[in-house]
Amino acid sequence: MRRVLVTGGCGFIGSNFVRMLLAEEPAAHVVNLDLLTYAGNPRNLEDLEDSARYRFVHGDVRDEVLAEELVRDADWIVNFAAETHVDRSTPAKAGEFIETNVYGPYVLLDALRRTQNAARFLQVGTDEVYGSISPPARPREDAFLNPSSPYSASKAGGDLQALGFHRMLGMDVIVSRSTNNYGPYQYPEKLLPLFITNALQDEPLPLYDGGTQIRDWLWVDDHCQALLLLLREGQAGEIYNVGANQEPEITNGELTRILLRLLGKPESLIHPVDGLRPGHDQRYAVDTSKVRALGWAPSVELEEGMERTVAWYQARRDWWEPIKSGEYRDYYRRHYRFEAKG
Ligand code: TYD
Image 1: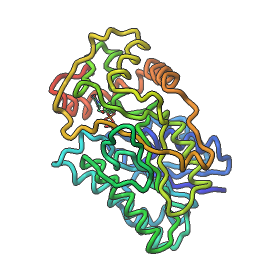
Image 2: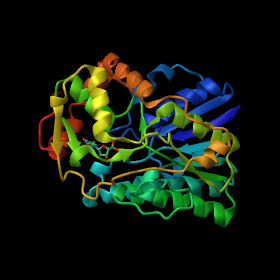
Image 3: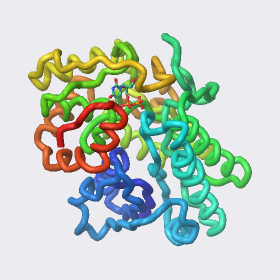
Image 4: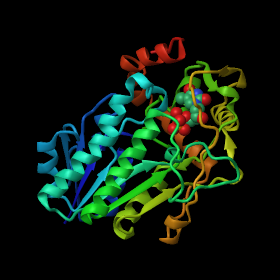
């Protein structure tokens, strides 16, 4: 039996990972610790509720007593629990990001130290820690950290906490840094699910700052496969970039137009807006040769992945329509200064 503690397993990447892990590792038993803050949704894993190999624990990664109890029995710990949205990480809210993204991994790691469990700890990170990258550079894992927002600064802090525990205590820690993920169950505040669901409701698509920015879009299951590989074969104390390395690179504007074509919706839905993301990073890119040397490669091309994503959101209005009310609606009105259809 392989006992896996996943934190933040009710979020987007976490829930896709839990489902994949249980399918691919027949000996795996998963405990999912999730606080169910706004983007954590128990419905993301409702298909596993009756599984004898899955247990949900409602709680906080910053709870030292609970963390100690849960890490004690784990063979692998995968930390997805994070505040993730750049637009929410205003200076006034930075404390919440630091609490979850820096203090959270610290509590888990220190619980591991106290229990003297030699479990492998995978800190799931982001390429945003490298900041905006001028073309054609692609930073390797040892590149300078240059975060542009409280979000990415806090993620960099979490990575460094994890690596510090490895260096001081020899703990079995790995850090991954992936590019932008997309696919089913992504909370509709991020670019692709926001634009797909808005378009399905014939609502404007708020395209920031001319739409010239570049992201490296990674199909979520390809990311999860890389994480599984790192858990099995990664080297302790190492950082691994994970990304699709799209060729040619694609701007947000081009991505939006592909989306509208797939949805059969007019480009007149595009609503250019400026100034909603101070310090907006122009381009993210990473060198992924290290994870590829372990045998990983992405398997889903961008257009194929976008077709699948669009089909999922078309089929799962029951999932996203309830989300686009309540807290989401308030956030949307505050941030974009226009109404979201409930
Ligand atoms: P996002 O999905 O928030 O991910 P990240 O900031 O982590 O890359 O944004 C992706 C890109 O899309 C980024 O360049 C900002 C842009 N964007 C918009 O143009 N409009 C939007 O409403 C959002 C949320 C993002």
